[in-house]
Length: 288
Image (spheres, rainbow, N blue to C red):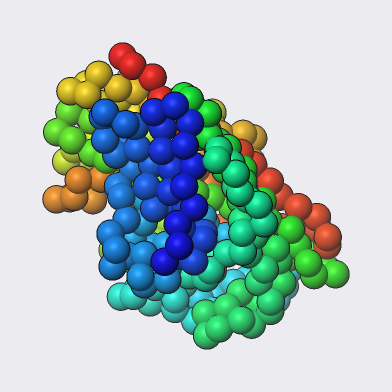
């Protein structure tokens, strides 16, 4: 597995193009990992699902029973995620990406999806692109998807970072509503954010047990590690106004995933023929 290493000041990023165009490591020298680092076994799998961060293209989260409906048509997708019967997180994470360019502080990766590629393949052609730019205080990721069909088709974007979580790690973000889910994490009801899930003031994430999609997000979120004296500010452009928050029990990570559409709703997020949907997410690191 060949990694692309970006360095700027004390920040270090290792990219894994052959493992789903993912980030293998994002760390601050002298402090440690900011995102959960990928193990050798995770990288050897050739997928990004157990890495530090991977792209979500052409959709985020689950498509219930693989039934993709839009414009009066129905397409059936096969399961693509171990142990989950609903197609999840698109195709990009499961394939190698091509390296278009790289230097010491930046890189560009591209993935071309042909129609019907693989058992779980998305039925529409697209080109996805990621750009990575590192400076002494931040990592900025640009991500886009270009519709290569001659018709309007569904398309979405997202990033799936795994933030290192300690006992005192906190999250702050402003959110409008949230979808309650069933036992298979499928959305069933949209409600205003309840008090127990209100992150408008920074609060510890440990023990929250969340795996939910929120809307009404303003594109800003802050992760704080008080014991490290460290803060990470996440800023996302207009393409990302949904945030999936995943806090699994018994793990030393949690996820705050900027995404372009609600869980299960990519069929309502249509992209014109030849058009491109693009956004940018930055991770800015500072001392408290």
